[in-house]
Structures are given as C-alpha cells and as structure tokens.
Length: 190
Image (tube, rainbow, N blue to C red; front, side, top):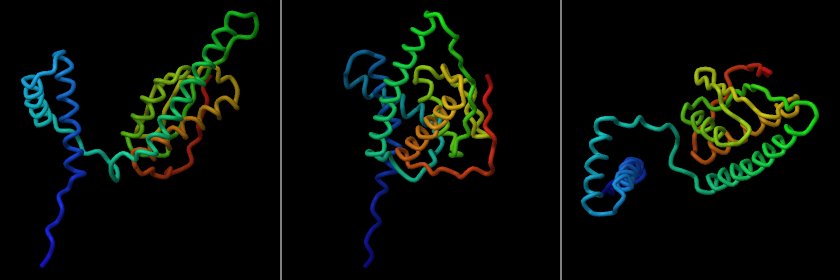
C-alpha cells in the first residue's frame, strides 16, 4: 500500500503571502481593523490576483533565514558607513581644497535573474552616496553614479560592494547565479 503524497505546503505558502500582504495593505488603507475590512480586503486581494496573476518567481525555494539576516546586517553596516562617508564629503565640500570627484560606474552582475537585478538596484538606491542611473537586464549591467569615487581604488571598492550585495541577495533568496557568458570590460565614466 502506497502512502498518499503530502500536500505542497511551500507552494501554498508562496500563493498565500501575496494575499495576506494585500489584505494587510487594504486594512491599513482603511485605518481600522474590523472583520468587514479583513473580509473586504480578502475579496479585493483575490480579485486583483485573479485579474493580474503574478509571474512565477525563479529560484529553488523560500527565504533562507540565516543568509537573509546576514544580508540585512551587512546592508545596515553599509548604510552606516555610507552615511558617515557622505557626511564627511559634505564637510569637505565647504572647506577649501580640491573638489570631490564622482564617477558613473558600470558593474556587471553575475546573476541572470531580473528579480535579483531589481533587488540589487533597489538596495543600492537606499545606500547614501550612490544612485542607480540605469540598469540593463539584457547585459546584466548596472550603472550607478557614485559620490567620492574619484580614483580606481574607490571604483574597485564600489564594484566589490555591489558584488557582495548581489551574493548576499542570491544567498538569502536561494536564486542561482548564472556564470558570466563572457568577459565584459567594465568602464568608468567620469
């Protein structure tokens, strides 16, 4: 006698998360918690997800908690360090001396996933001192304006930071990183 196959709880959980999120947003928009708001939010969430289904997210599974905590910790450290660097550069800007140089830096990502690229771009946008100005998914390249990146060492440090950030996101999400198809020269535009 064969055993019945267990239910796909991971798949059910992945489908339930957007519903719960939309219900939460609905209740927050109404400003009061009531069963009528929860049921109304559930109806709206199911209607929205039926009308506009989410594409399947690539990857092997769910969030890896330890890797996610490490990614959040490193990102928090990046925020503190970058904030201090921008504050120091702001002080240097009012003092006499050479102007602060900045660069537009191209960084080729290892992952071919557009989702990973979007996460990297969003995370970089939150870090003071860097602004993503263009992302090219077909080339897996992110272009960012980096404050204070006036020499090759600072550009290399920024590229290393982006690669570490990408590796942290891939580890946290369990997304496979596709190897680079060919060597692409990364340029610095000043």
